[in-house]
Image (cartoon, rainbow, N blue to C red; front, top):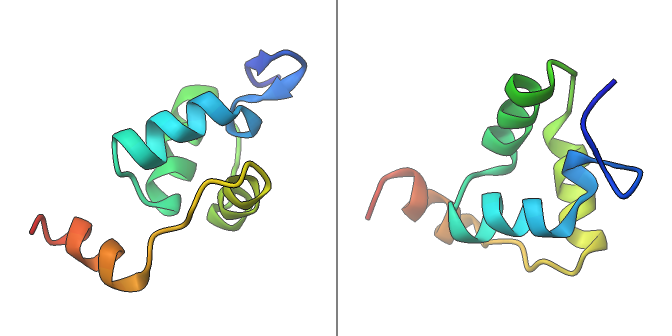
Length: 72
């Protein structure tokens, strides 16, 4: 089983998502990949998006995402 925090899977934890998405500026694809590597369990990037929205974490615009991707 995956690591749980307060009976939640890791990607359901708001603090973990804030760390990955806001502070580390990872994309949903990169966060899903990080979860798979840490937990050895499947996670879809759309699942990450749903949990970001559920926790009211503001999603980046396409322009912001592209800027992060290109390191500008």
